[in-house]
Image 1 (cartoon, rainbow, N blue to C red):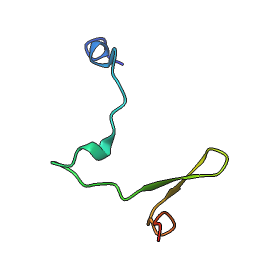
Image 2 (image 1 turned 90 degrees about the vertical axis):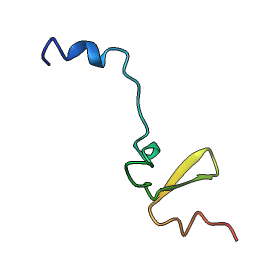
Image 3 (image 1 turned 45 degrees about the vertical axis):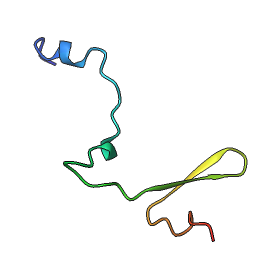
Length: 51
């Protein structure tokens, strides 16, 4: 990486791309907690909806 770019990356934090709602689109992902502290991620959300 070029030396002039390295300082920009020092201390950089992860950024949730779905927070860019003004310029971008929401990401259609649902997360559901299941037994034994496992996590499932669904693309369409149909299994995550509770009746």
